[in-house]
Image (cartoon, rainbow, N blue to C red; front, side, top):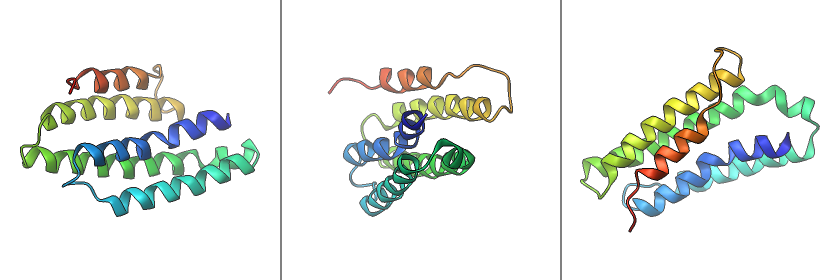
Length: 132
């Protein structure tokens, strides 16, 4: 259970780090560092408490992912407006990733009856990237 929580809360901080390398002119390294520190603190809470404590904060953890996704989308959108290479393809990939992530959030909160499909969203995001 701890590994599952840790893996999903670290997705977007690590992704924001990658985006900051792809688009350094548009990225805000201060935000990325603060985001990392916040997720690191949450990670310690998850590691040091029993599951009945940190599972009550699932929605809060998911909200931190929304903050990270908004930041990543903002950086890629600014890169697109600045005509950076591959930024349009990255916007399409991020949109697919957002839709699949939203499905999984709704699924795990038992708001809809579907199947988790986030792995498909990650595949679509990676498959659109050209090789450098």
